[in-house]
Length: 152
Image (cartoon, helix red, strand yellow):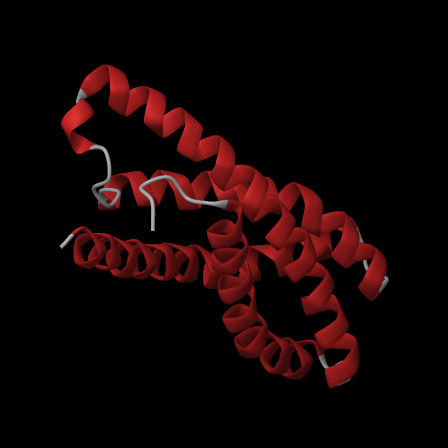
């Protein structure tokens, strides 16, 4: 495993992230919205596909920017897991971008107004913000351990 993430690793990261989220969200959305499990599941899947695409694009851009910052500030920090504060910024920006894509789609799918869809999305963000932070923090820790073991 290299220090720089491969396209395969980015894909695996995004699929794992969305699969766990899908398994957690579909039943809860069905129950909370009073819609069929299939209807909630399809919306969750659509949101997941948008999120996976955004995940790969956003993380690629974020990694490039972070490498530039680290190269200028402290080259010795390359390969170390991201600090918790960086993960907080990462999660906030990621979720803000996702809101811009998900709100119109949810409004259309559920046949509700943009305000109602925005409120629904705020509920999703309240789940996904800590979920994104926790998932990526754990992923970074596991990846760093795998890199250390591979170096031995």
